[in-house]
Amino acid sequence: MKAKITVTPKKAVLDPQGKAVQNALEQMGYKGLRGVHVGKYLEIEVEGDRETVKAQLEEACRKLLSNPVIEDFHLVLE
Image (cartoon, rainbow, N blue to C red; front, side, top):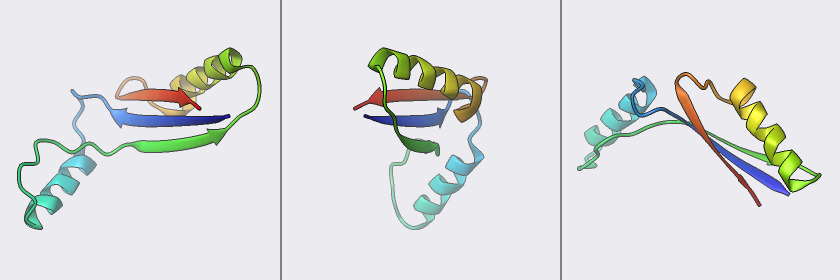
């Protein structure tokens, strides 16, 4: 099965990379941008029991793949 993990900055956290992308897009003529947030996307091929795999990956997200103080993660198993 495939795990798809998206890690993004929390809404209340300053995102300088997102702000830089937003500024660049506005300078290129793109209008109406209200906020840009830059994050990470991971795909991981896994085997095993679905519930066990999900629990292990959620733990990995909290301990390694994201910084829970400033980032949120979303995990989907396919």
